[in-house]
Image 1 (cartoon, rainbow, N blue to C red):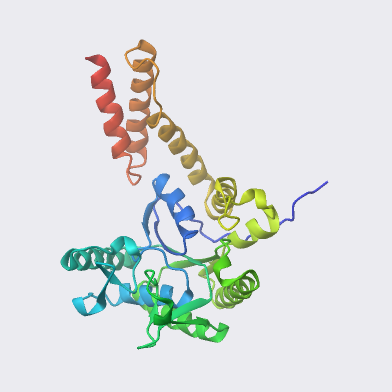
Image 2 (image 1 turned 135 degrees about the vertical axis):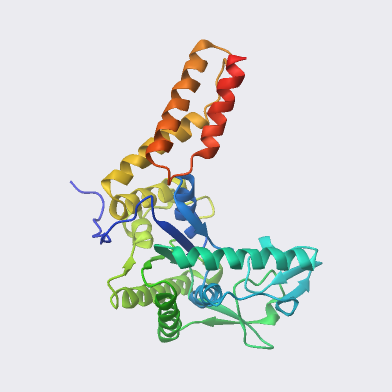
Length: 331
């Protein structure tokens, strides 16, 4: 008896591999996928502006990387003692204006360089709602807890999002012709908008990404939203806030992602790396014992051999750790 709905997931051809560069941008759920890829030693750049929820902010940010936009003092404002940018997450905010600008522009340069060589762009959309400054009609990526009267809240239409993405994708193709794009829709519920409003918002995002992916063979839709909402479909897969998918749910989604988006050889590499990372995090009860020395030496050899065979995967941190531990135990 089958207790779960089956979802047909289209695999890309060729699939993602460890030699690829992966650019990840979008909502907080993006960071679950991006964070897992980063932990597993993929070459990845994640959210250069910080978390972005709506389609217009994603498009605006991507175009700013292509254009190598340099932010100036005119792009910042001061609120609650902090210098902030309407287009950046609050982790860029700070007391010193020069430092804030320096960090933003360093991130812009890194994004431009990485996007130029990226093989994959993963875009996760969280909401169709956009916030615009009442004085200028400028769309903002982050409201920074400013008074609500400063903004107009706008449920962006499908045609408006499609127009923004088509313009953005045209620029991307010119900037990096070999780039492949994966769209996902975040299963995180935006209940501040209201349950029904959240569903309207997600429905528009789903329609937009399906229209976009039907227009090019280099664009794909990975059904993260459907895997949580339609396959798991149970509140036990959400955190206590009933909004964010929990560890079990995000791990399930990531397993499906690797299953359908990565080749067999790279899946085997993932298992080897997981084993090395598990050993790296191991805390021995008896660090001076012969058993622990043998354990350290075995993994030192394993990391050296792995690094020789796969020099494009960076295990320098783990190699340094096992080398140092071997010296300490010998002494």
